[in-house]
Amino acid sequence: MTAAASRSEALASAGTAEPEWLWRSGSLVPWREARVHVNAVGHASVAAVFEGVKAYLAADGRRLLVFRLEDHLRRLYDSARICRLALPYDLDTLRGAVCGLLTANGYRQDAYLRPWAFPQGVIREQMVPAGTICEVLVDSWPFRSLLEAGGGCRAAVSSWQRISEAAMPPRVKAFSNYHNGRLALMEARENGHDWPIMLNERAKVSEGAGACLALVRDGEVVTPSLTSGVLPGITRDTVLTLLRDLGVRVREREVDRSELYLADELFFMGTAWEILPVTAVDGLTVGDGVPGPLSRRLAAAYTDLVRGRDGRHRHWLTEVPLP
Ligand SMILES: Cc1ncc(COP(=O)(O)O)c(C=O)c1O
Image (cartoon, rainbow, N blue to C red; front, top):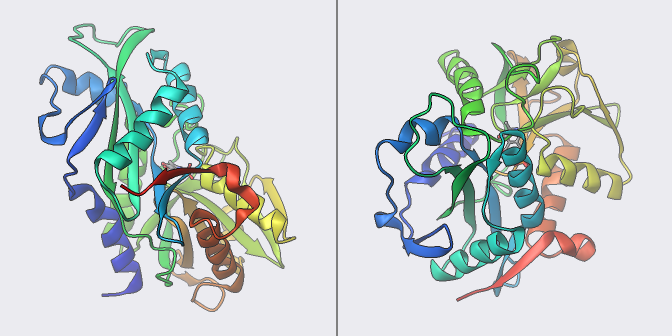
């Protein structure tokens, strides 16, 4: 199996795990018994917002470190606000929910967390009304980090356009927005690539199906600005901080498609993808066709950070003792 295929498999297979517990609206409930009435399915999928968070096993093997939990929860509230959904829990409660769930499920390995919220109760309106109170859930499952796996992926610019601020705000992490990335992903796979890159309504580079994107040229890192139709990625922000720590020049601006073809290095960045180098774009080799030196350096710095070896950004780590 190629490195790209094993990365894809690791990303895709994570969701089959059945943990013992799930956090639901204030308490831990057995995962298998967490059900909703069938009536909720349509509304839950159209008007639901979520987050994807990772808890890494610390390098000392004694604790889990939830990475940038507060920032993820803040983005959940931002998404809910834009969608006019009411979350009846404050940030401290949700932070406690995440930590308590990790302990209850007994994780002694890397775990992925999905806090999410959907309109509660029976809704018969065609459109979920503004201010609808949501149920809030936190689900979790083990995952295999790809940070030390090496390898890269083949990307292609999609014929599907990234959703725009004028129609479906891309800064909202809503399940319904993912139909856009899903169409692009299926097209990419159909054409023999691993992941799509989407352009926005101005034909400028936006992001991948579930990760932001950056290119390296002449020692400078360039990433599409936050008004290019991207989710304000927490990994993107982390990477920009790490690059500044490393003394690398960073620019956030509009990016043309043809700049991708001239890049020395190209990489996706996201909670799920972590740092994923792109080794070919639209069939053109990027750099030497293997992950470039800066991508590798960044992946190492990111690993040190999330595993607690680099103490410089300790405030980004929420410690949970192993059970
Ligand atoms: C559409 C999209 N863009 C970007 C990202 C990266 O965001 P983050 O780094 O906060 O995970 C994600 C991650 O979920 C995403 O779904």
